[in-house]
Length: 179
Image 1 (cartoon, rainbow, N blue to C red):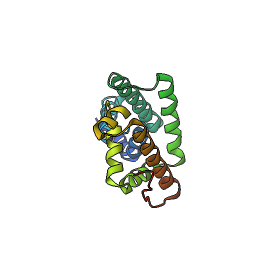
Image 2: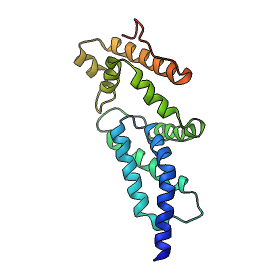
Image 3: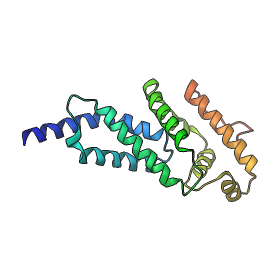
């Protein structure tokens, strides 16, 4: 009984330590915050159910990231029916690179979220519309009464603003082209 309690205590300690990085890992591939939070809960549930298979002294992070990776790939396969998606091999490459990038700069996701919040409301709305499930450039253009080319140019300008904000921590000011 005490051994089981010790194992549960170790699990809780490790989960509290690694959960923010696992969430950041999920968010590098899953744009929707709600979907990412749901996946994080699913990862926690799987890990908790399989707590007996975790060996104290082994790398909890590798175990947890492996479960998260599998959950993300399954999520993407389910979403494949809703919209165009990457091939399985490309998704695996992106997932692996996302995991590697977290070691380089774990604060990047926080920076991205902060930079998105600095965008003008109309730009945040455009990003939200474009990344809704089943959304396409054409569907967004139709909904906004603009051409696909105009939507594409505006999104590219927004991506440039976000990249500059993340890399140089500069204030975002809309330009004529990005409005």
